[in-house]
Length: 418
Image (cartoon, rainbow, N blue to C red; front, top):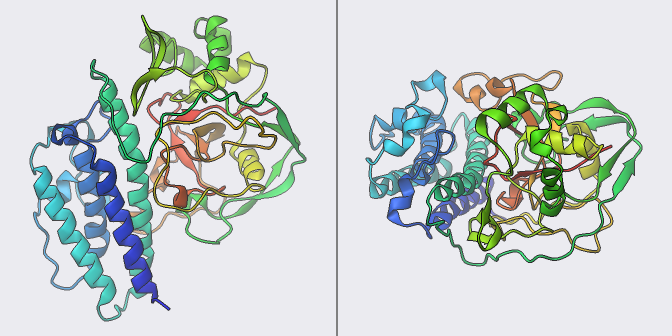
């Protein structure tokens, strides 16, 4: 039977390889693309995930470890103020140096260090090391998803509408989805949060009791065609449907449709990682803000679920395949025979109406690593589920994603509740 260390090295190696695999379709010029201050270049993602392993494992625990370049501690620090001053996020695309080859060399250097740390003599901080390697793997998986969302946004700014290609992916079909229906749930005194079986981030803990009133949850996500009806009815022109901050965004930013919708001479189109494709009415509406999701729900006399409701509904259904690789680059239509709550993990993250706040009894981990989640528990909304570009092995009912309600560049959609 393989040891814990050997199994962990295999998981580490697979995760690190996958980051390089998803970058392989890129041109060298793409590696430094940063379409907005919220989106990071692919090269920075490759370097930052290495910085994480180096900063929280190799520097404190591997004897005689030497870094490739002392300045990397600043260049590739995202937001960990406890270990130094990060390079400003909006300027990551200006980092033409170090070169891509230099970053790849840095990754190999860090990879060799982690293997040495795990395969050497047992360290007195062995339990902490194992815990942090697991966290580093899960952290890199998050950045793999961010790679897709960020490169999509950056490519979308190019009038040529470039295509990101990857083998074993397909353009989704326009299959007819099932009729929208609402599945009833009794509610009651339920438990929310991770149950301790497997990895969880600190923001999923502690597991605690929540009272949930009886509710109904939509069997699938809202489609493009359904959202188009909202637009046709003046949805973006009716302040009565919008939260005050949402209406400010609509009028200031000039929103009139989801982020990647394009109206062309060839008809309604949508920018995707496959390039521009004909907009498919049956596919889930995607890349909308929390404010848009809220306005749509009000328009159709429904609401967004709470995160407690979502977790209760999802807990009754099976998890996605725990593989590493994703199989699609755009959300697909729900299966026509779906009668239960579907599209939980494989299409779009689903906005909830729950504020991203700590669970009762939450405690931030000591030191800089405690900055991972806790300090962001302010002014954001919780999203649940997963998307077509999420790493399936990472998803579970208790997973809490979080973004600001105006954010639209993530694969975010709408599931209704009543």
